[in-house]
Every structure is written in structure tokens, then in C-alpha cells.
Length: 109
Image 1 (cartoon, rainbow, N blue to C red):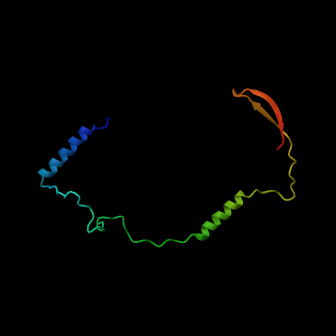
Image 2 (image 1 turned 60 degrees about the horizontal axis):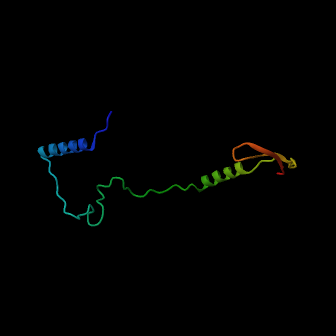
């Protein structure tokens, strides 16, 4: 389905305005520079989304429990009495600019 062009939308809006005026509607003229504010404030009756501030539920204990679980997951778990392996040298392949292997070297970790 093709989107309507700007000219078609403009024509539809003009038709709707004409129908509104023909059925007794009227357009209120507003002075240039006049604000939508009433005495420098918004009209509270028209702002449906404003409501009194609600009391918040403290969740400090929940956040502390979550942080504790995260710390436990991050901590490395080593079995008791385990020994660390001595670090052994490993092979490392050196490549040229085109991705072809040039040589193999041994690297201490």
C-alpha cells in the first residue's frame, strides 16, 4: 500500500476543517505571542498525567543481597589443597601482513 503524499494529506485536512466549520464548529483566533500557559502555569485540569508523588518502597536489603550474590559468582572457586600448575612455555605463530605464517616462537606465560 502506497503512503499518501503531502499534498493528499493537506487536501484531506482541508476537507476535514471545512466539514467541521459547516457543521457549526468555529476556530478560535489566538493573538500572536500568546502563550498556552494560564497565568504562567499549565492548566492542571488538562494535565492528566500529573498525580501526587507516591511513597517509594525501600529496597536496600534486596540490593545488598543481589550485590552479595554477584560477588560470590565473581570470586574464583578453588578446591581446598589444589596446587597451581607451573607455567609452561607455549607455541606462538608469527604471521606476516597477508596472514601467512612466518615462524613459530615459544613464549613463557
